[in-house]
Image 1 (cartoon, rainbow, N blue to C red):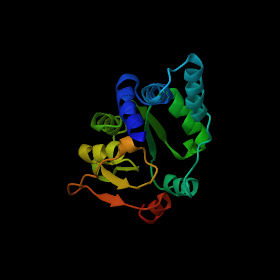
Image 2 (image 1 turned 45 degrees about the vertical axis):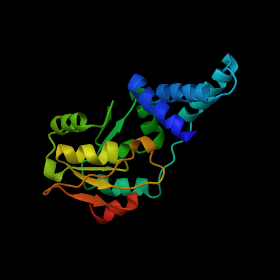
Image 3 (image 1 turned 90 degrees about the vertical axis):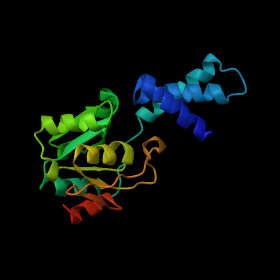
Length: 189
């Protein structure tokens, strides 16, 4: 069943982008594909309500994230880069309570080479001293390395399956660091 949802989500991202709207379509389309019975308007409404319940779910932070961000923000210029629907992502950032640690936030449609190059140019970042930190090889690590940035990979068991990929190697003088916990960043930066 999860394989069907993954396939449908890939299709919906192409049509609708990332976010709740796309997720709602993916759940409804998956339900229709897997249901033995015709999907009634009531069942469709139930799927829609379920999808929207995710939007109000409290943001759950990994251990020691605020403390680590405070430590890093005191020493570095932090920029939060996320992808998805602007209103949804802005709400998540606000609800997380972490916005205060970032000098800027960037919400992009896709975290790819073009997006990273635009951010580097906008903030006049230098490649050799800029690091992308994330848990997604597909959207965080590999495109950052392809842009010429350094990267820190923090593997996480709950990373969305559509973000899975092999982690590319860094081409010297680039650096790629892997840490097991977000809090480990304070040992390196």
